[in-house]
Amino acid sequence: MGLKTIYFSLLFLFFASSAFGQKPEAKFKEQQFKPEEKVFVDYNSSLVFPGEYLYYKVYVLNDKTNRLSSLSQIAYVKMVSENGETIFTHKINTASGTGNGDFFVPTNIASGTYKLIAFTEWMYNKSDTNFFSGTVFVINPYTTKGEKSLKRVASAQVDDINTISEKENSATGIIKLSNKAIFNKREEVKLLLDSLKLKEGNYSLSVYKKNKLKLPDKLNISNLQKIYTKEDNNSNSTSSQPYLPELRGDLFRGTISTTNKNLSVSNQSLAVSVPGDNFQLKISNTNEEGVFYFNLDASQSVDNLVVQMMGENAHDFEIELDSLPKFNYSSLYFPPLEISPDMESEIVKRSVFNQIENSYYSIKPDTLKTQGKKEPFFGSKNIAVYPLDDYTRFPTVKETFIEVISAAKIRENKKGESVFGVYSRNSDLEFISSALLLVDGLYIENTEALMNYSANKIDVIKVVRNEYYYGSKIFGGIISIETKENDFVGSYQSGSLKKFDIIPVRAAKNYYVVNYKKQELDRIPDFRRQLLWKPRLTNNFQNISFFTSDVEGDYIITLQGISNDGRIIFDQICFEVVD
Image 1 (tube, rainbow, N blue to C red):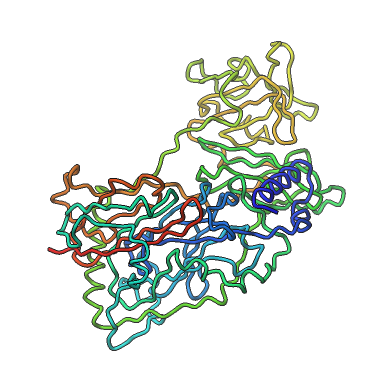
Image 2 (image 1 turned 180 degrees about the vertical axis):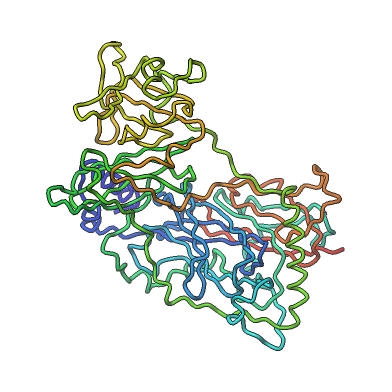
């Protein structure tokens, strides 16, 4: 079965299971799909100090072809310590087969050896040891934490962490410098990339000062085949419930339960709300075992969501979300970091440089890529919009709907509960009940909570006057209320409502690039060790340049990635910065 066949089979499997409440895991096992993904992480340095950034790029690859994978849209990057502590967990959007992120090393981190772990959830089904692992050393002179993990020696051999063999360095010859290999401080360096050897693909380009400490060689993409052993490929995951590939973005799995013997967990509906400016709403049905799935847009970075049961018996159910797969890190080797007295001056100097550089961060900042406000899921056409500041203000929600909102109305049902509905577009007399009611994107089941909310805090009310089909539910229109301060969600309670903190998808960044020709930086200190970090080099291989800093020494330029035809590309060259 080919990759495309697997991909579309899984898509059909997932949609069918979600729509009809079937169990996708059972179909998964029947088909016996074998995960054909692996992950490689390119990170800028295997030695970091507090105040520095660990930059990284994730490649999600097809295990057979080495081409970028079109399956998992999400990858996970973790940093773990020798004692099993997780320093960070990042969720990366890999919709294009790659993604990137960074970690600012804090002053409270302990010195020692750490592992950079990366995986997709889909990979766990092959083996609980089927993940990427790279070594990162931390030296923190500001704390005594972790000192026992350092190996004290009389003197340490000064070596280059990024040293590569002559054979590797001459194998590609893609990177070329303009006629020299020695540059002055704050001088422009222009790179030439051989377009005949560098085919179209997806690459990263890093320019970093060599670390002069005795450390093991850092993994590069040429080591890809050695990272994933045959043992990993033949072992099986211990998970009783397989993880599905995150084909459509950020995929969540959860279960519901109840102690009420008269209620079934099968075919129950849940509303998943991500409140805020760019709110999301998902409606999911459970299968016969009370399992439900939902996707969130991977391009949006959210750190919390609200899940609640729908219907009269909502308060009788409990909701839980599954955690990330538990990979087995027991076999990881954490090599010791050798520290000697002759390193003291280098450690002190580097730490001072970091403090100075960070004090000028506001002048040379990285910036997040702005997303802007997105259109709501119900669109923007054929909607009645009521900006309340354009009308006479009324203190209560009920009065506001009576006096201002002509397209909708509030009435009471037989239980005395407030019911929000809209008038048919074809008639201002025909009242349609059971509208989908939202406040700042939050699905509202407990309407009385809204009735007690001050209407003076409401900014705008939008009404969709058509029947709306969402998931397995049919609503008689939509009423979307947006507040001024987004403060309604914090106090809202209803039935089985449960709020979950989730790992946000890392927002993409534009990394700052120093340009002494265009910026007035003459009086600003420049102690950068990372002179250039371009994680998204795809097709524009010309006119690449950067400026050196005030830090003298040897630097290394690293280009690595995957061509569109699955060919591994790796090249490195060195240059020197002098006073």
